Length: 348
Ligand code: NAD
Ligand code: WQD
Image (tube, rainbow, N blue to C red; front, side):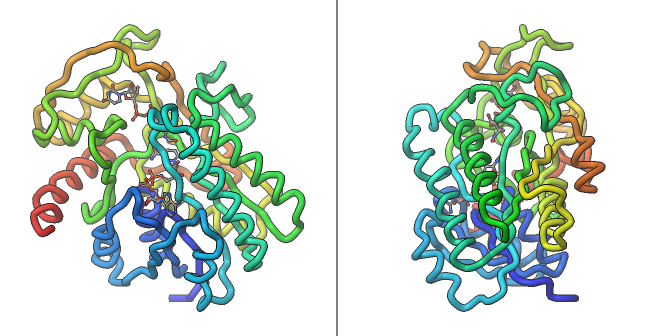
């Protein structure tokens, strides 16, 4: 296959990063993973090797140090771009430890931009989030929707990073960037060899569902059934992580071929369909034929009632569309949970 050049993937051992590394390899790019392993496990690198047959290039390094990154990268020439996943993402923790989040997420982006300047790396894909919209005034939410005051320091870091990257690329002619606003990434690779590995008690719905079905958690708590939605539970736009990963290749191709229309572009990455928490529970039980005990509890503070994405801009301008539905998301998440517990954890 044609060698399309090196792409730095910060946070490439993490959940979305590892699935993106698999897709980059499948498309002929050579990813260079930079990850501190603060929120990931090197066993995922073995999974990538099993899926692709290639041992990915990996450097254990903290992206908050430009010197450490330059040391790791000294042997590579002609790096085409950076996909920047590395960040902290626990919304609740960001409220109790805001400086940790500003330092890593905002400080990390500043180091990445300086690295681009010093090594003359022209293209950057940034991991943003639908969290920048808060509770939108109209649904589905498109990229022009006003940015609301952030619900958490985590959300604020995403807003700040987008502004910083915008200012950087506008000021420097040779650089360009795409910010991808993910809705709710779930699911795992169809091989079940890689997937989401939350540390401790999961904050997010789907890992909590799979751990409950496996018997690790007693019951799932549904946070509120009195919202102004069809069944009273919150609605989100869940998107398969492999669809999400593929969008990064499309966006990187766009930047490398200079097909971008603006120096800083923003795309929503969602399916355009909303699903409620109760619908997710029903679908999980139906698809996987396993019981899932749950109780209804109080609302979770800070939760948005409902949000889903307007996908027109990503579909028409980026040329990317989510293909996988809720069934594949919940089936693959369950297969990964079982594989992880029965194989990876047992071998460790
Ligand atoms: P993840 O925690 O699984 O992966 C992040 C990776 O970055 C981890 O491997 C971690 O070890 C690494 N990392 C963190 N700080 C680092 C540092 N200073 N230096 C080097 N490595 C570092 O998270 P994820 O779910 O894969 O998310 C990836 C990105 O997408 C993040 O920027 C996150 O904010 C964003 N995002 C995630 C979601 C989601 O629900 N998962 C939604 C929207 C946006
Ligand atoms: C989904 C729905 C919960 C757990 C978070 C971040 C956001 C983005 C994606 C990074 C909600 C309900 C959950 C549980 C439940 N991340 N729920 N019981 O809150 O949409 O978004 O992840 O950018 O910034 O805030 O995702 O998976 O936590 O929750 O009822 O045990 O499931 O109330 O309605 P959320 P989530």
